[in-house]
Each structure stands twice: as structure tokens, then as C-alpha cells.
Image (tube, rainbow, N blue to C red; front, side, top):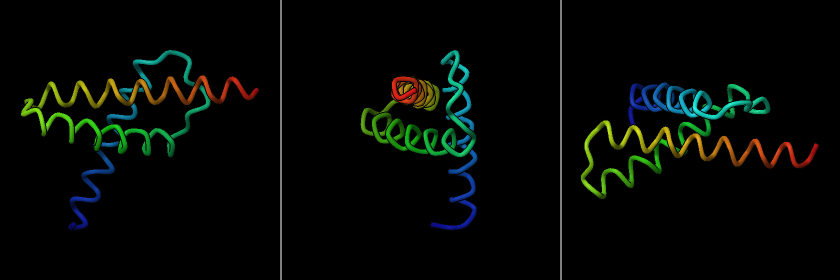
Length: 83
């Protein structure tokens, strides 16, 4: 993988994670680094699902944001449950 591919993946992951956080209200315990990790994970899973189903860009992107929102929600509930 080239350095430009890694940087592109990180930037797209940050965008997906940020959009996922915007969908979920009151996601306080999620910081910038965790948002990036969630976005990269959701982006990878969504790209794998969308690619295997032959979906277009926008449907795959929507799935990635939805997956990021679900992961943020799960993490928020897990962290609030500990407090």
C-alpha cells in the first residue's frame, strides 16, 4: 500500500467517523482518535459489504456512515454504563 493510499484511508475514515458521530446525539466519550478508528473500521466493513453486493458509491457510503453510527452508539452505552 502506498503512503497516499494510507493517508486517503485515514482521511476518509475520519470523515465517516465524524458523520457517524453527527448522526448519534450526545456521544461525549468519543474523542478524535477514537472517531478516526471507528471511521476506519466502519469504512472497511462497509466497503467489504458494498463491494461484495455490487452496490454503488452512495449506497456503500451510507452503509459506512450507518455502521459508524452504530459503533459510536454501542461505545457510548458501554462507557456510560461504567460511570
